[in-house]
Amino acid sequence: MATFNGETFLPEQLSSLAGQSHCPHELIVCDDSSTDGSRALVEAFAETAPFPVQILRNDRNVGYADSFLRAARAGTGEWVAFCDQDDVWLPTKLARCAEVIGQYPQLVLLSHSAFQVDAELNHLPWKHPDHKSFRVSAPLHGPRIKSIPGFSLVFKGELLLGLPLSRRPPDLAAHDAVVYQLANIYGYTAWLPDALVLYRRHKEAATAEGVGKAAHMSIRTRLKMRLTGDPQSFERMAVRVCDYAAFCDLIRRECSRYAVDPGFARRTDEAIDYFRALGEGFRQRQKMYGKGTGSLQRARILRRLISSGSYWRIGQGVGMGLGGLTKDVIRAVAPF
Image 1 (cartoon, rainbow, N blue to C red):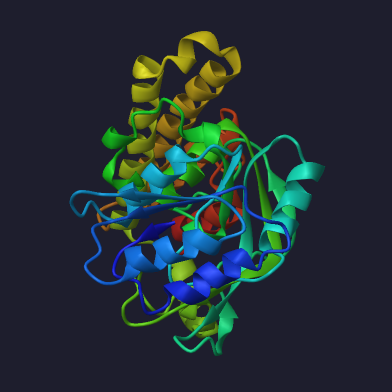
Image 2 (cartoon, rainbow, N blue to C red; image 1 turned 30 degrees about the horizontal axis):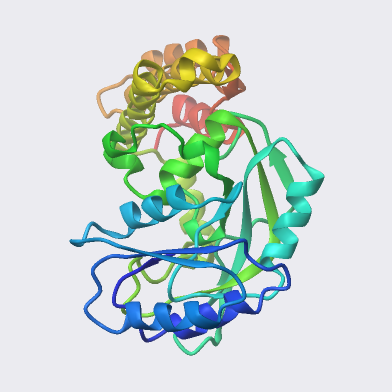
């Protein structure tokens, strides 16, 4: 848990941790130089908590991401669950996660759904995240998204061992972003439809309000977004995944585990090749959607992408998908 001036909602969250049907191994709290009563609340909780509580204090404010990562690295358990200071865990969160971990020993991460609620814990009309069904994704086959909300993640602590996290790229600055991408590279991820947290949205939240509202856009608006492309969006995606490749290359050069763990080394190399190839695919799509690109050139780009298999499989990872292919075919033959 990372805390910063969270005394308003912190007691409810601490109480929900104490009420877990599967008792936590420990609670590690990193306080990011709070100026309210957050630290005192945690200290008082530690005196009666049914599990050990360790409190870390930052001498200066470093932000919630580095605070979460510091706490995660200080843990002594095999698995780590990020815990936001203003949410409420439902009583069976840890029990359900432990059940899935026991059934699928190859997992390194799982993410569950959550109910969105307002400041008074009244339910809002959507979930976030909202995993529709249970599934397990193989390495480099998880969704190509920036991150999964940290409060929904339970992951193996060894993911963070010995890695140069202080030099992670800007797009992996958030604690949940870097953990998710590392898990997608080095192991299997489970996606649970079970809503196990009350995800509180309020004006003091560190992340933006309104998450999940996109799902309630009109069908016409969503269809237009899917069928019309923005060249700059493909450029941003290309830069993002190339940054991922550079970070993996940094791991290869500086992480001692690369030299002694053949499986770790192999997946690092596969990730570098995958992200570089994926970045090239996005750059080709950027050209396809550019205003100065003629129909013949668009058709040639599409043919190259299809013949290379970029929509189905790139190296050891998932390709750009049937949705990407459909969108690109429409762009090639009937541009908007």
